Amino acid sequence: MKARLAFIAGAGIGYVLGARAGRGQYEKIKTQATNIWNDPKVQNGIKTAEETIKEQAPVVAEKAKEAAVAGTEKAKEAAAAGTEKAKEKAEEVKDAHAHAQAKAEKQAEKAEAKANKETEKAVKKAEKETEKADKKAQKLVDEAPADVISDPATDMNDEGPAPTK
Image (cartoon, rainbow, N blue to C red; front, side):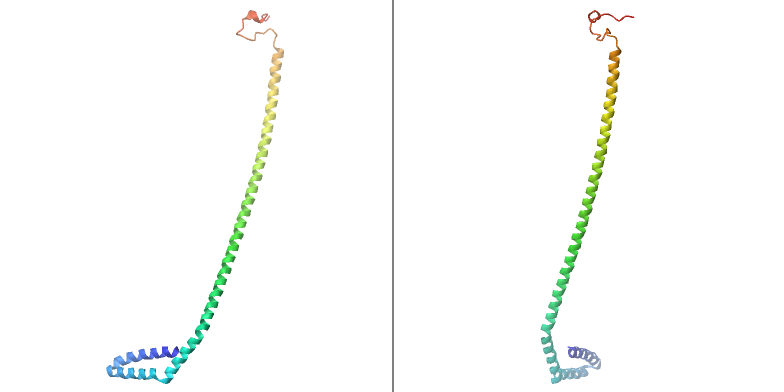
């Protein structure tokens, strides 16, 4: 391969130099290049290079295949690791959500218990107030004279004796 590149480079340089020197010089350089190309040593080197390439091609192909398989395995491992990390994060979020929900439920229970206590206090207070009002009403009924006119729609003569002063 190196010989081929060297030949191409030499031919290019020869062409440029030959073009400046004229057509005759160009023909001379072309003939020399053709002679070199047809030289048995050069042809033997080309054949050796071709054989080496043919021999090494399966080895290079196998190495490329192994590298591709190794790259695929690494990609799979990286994907699996990424998936595992994503699962862990999802589990963390799920746990945090469950914790927050439990905390909210506790707070709701506390608020409900407090509301129930306040309601019980209010009911007891209302019962006491009702009791007081009933006692006052009973006291007023007990203190009221028996012959007080209680119904203005009823004729006074039908209700009994008039109050005395």
